[in-house]
Length: 247
Ligand SMILES: CC(C)(COP(=O)(O)OP(=O)(O)OC[C@H]1O[C@@H](n2cnc3c(N)ncnc32)[C@H](O)[C@@H]1OP(=O)(O)O)[C@@H](O)C(=O)NCCC(=O)NCCS
Image (cartoon, rainbow, N blue to C red; front, side, top):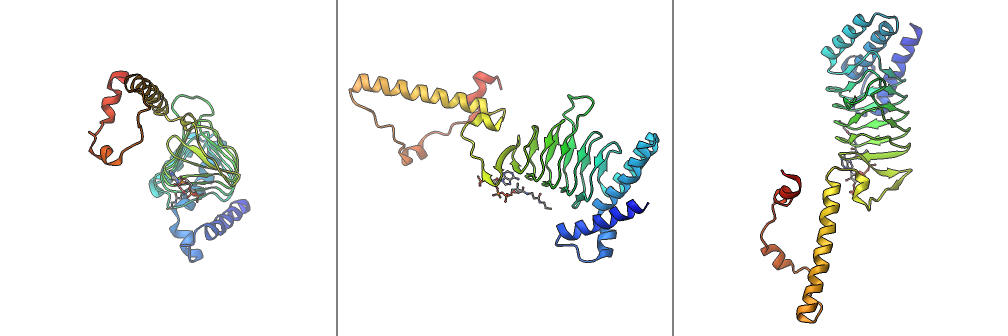
């Protein structure tokens, strides 16, 4: 019980550290559903570990009803977890969350639906996960990482990284900007299409240059005329893909 009150004091102190909007002890105690959800999780986790699985799930669902935050009793939560605003946060059964982690509203630590056993993410210490971000599968997020709002992270992230985008890719690592030069590094399903189109464009350009050279005996001017570009008919991207992808 002493441990519980110690962790309550720690959680409240963590809110004051992370949230400039926090004004008084009572405000934090009564107006932060993220804290209520974490405290309810201490109870549901205790019930879960003592074999009272139904009661544990029921407590967790009751907390979800009151706070809009669903933490499965099976999830291992570290110290000073701060769920800011809270609504819509889901933490799956086999998730592991380290110390000093901040989750904003709408974050999901979920499964991909393809794995069994350990199927939810493992977060290290001192991590911030932006609003609406989805971390899916049995992936590991290293210490001191930041996950951008609305990112979808499907792969392991090394410590000290910032990840953004769908699918998530690293934009900052150890304080340095990560420049992506190959579209494959983003691992977007559309990357292959873009690479293919770029290849075909290059091939066509070369063929055109060769034909013009043969026909006119001179190097054609392939520089882009902005006026002509504006007057050119608009290309509907879907039409480009109809043949290859049967859209
Ligand atoms: C990811 C984040 C932490 C990055 O912050 P940062 O380290 O200051 O990095 P920057 O703002 O310099 O962004 C780096 C690059 O990522 C891009 N980026 C940042 N956040 C992004 C996001 N959520 N989605 C897509 N791209 C993003 C930026 O445009 C920038 O790209 P550029 O250099 O090509 O212009 C921040 O943008 C973020 O999303 N924070 C979440 C905060 C939140 O959820 N608040 C909710 C409060 S209720």
